[in-house]
Amino acid sequence: MYEKNKDGYIKNGYNRYMLNFRNQYRAAKFITFFVGATLQYTKQETSGPTINEIQQLSPYETLLNPDGNYSVNLNSMNREQLATLPLSKFPYADWTYNLLREVRGRKFTNEDLSARVQAGVTINIIKGLTFDSKVQYEKRKTDYRKYYSEETFYVRDMVNYNVDYNNTTKTVNQVYLPKGGIETPAQLTNITLQPSPNTWYSNITSESYVFRNQLNFDRSFGARHAVVAIAGTEVSQYETNSRGNPWLYGYNPDKLQTTVPPYGYGSTGNTFKKPCRKHRHNPARWQYNFGMGAKQVFVILWQCLLYL
Image (cartoon, rainbow, N blue to C red):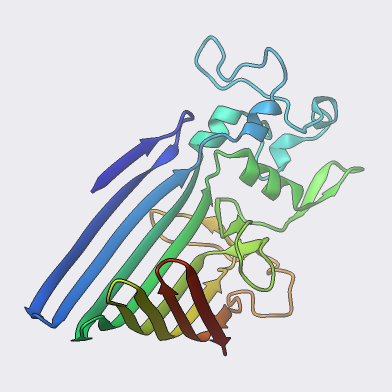
């Protein structure tokens, strides 16, 4: 299956590919095998404008001038104070903001690949008594990438802001960030990752398996009595690993080159290595159910669940 989705805003949408397979084979009257597999790949882009960015535009502001050049949007800049600065001495003389230019100059993408494999067997032992054994393995990997080019106000504002400026002499003494694009991890929310769901992620990998065995008994005795019973065990493991890469300054995606800030990253730690986070859950469960009825007048049900 192939699916293509385009959002109402530019540079928002995704392409999704999915392959699904399922087969069942009856080897004999008393035994049946089944196997299934699902593979899905999704590439999504979220570079388009957000509702918050659109709401920050003032009434009657335009994105393009009549001559086709970018117009100036207010954003958070104080134009009166900006006019007092010798912008030609800053790393970027153009310190203006335009929403359309911002959207065109950035690229936010995430790629998601997931695979799931299932297999099982059903054995008819005697009349009314069957045994089911099933196993499932699933793995999912998601990569996040946020790139801002020099065309974005995000880059020009960050580089121009991180300087040592002398207001008396109107000179820039030191520049702390190199010119060029910036690539960052993605800041995610609404996910169940430890220790915090609001942090930076470049990659999230989750892996799980479930192994279940179950005995089923369902049999009627004459016209009055029926017995239903279930006994089963289940063992599973869920593991999630995440990683956040360091920010890349002066980054050129075509040449895959980056520049270390002239005065370092301002940290005594190793900024090129971010600790990976791992979360694992290993539940085990035993389940027993028993029921008996007669003439549909009374039913006895007993159930027991045990978790480890």
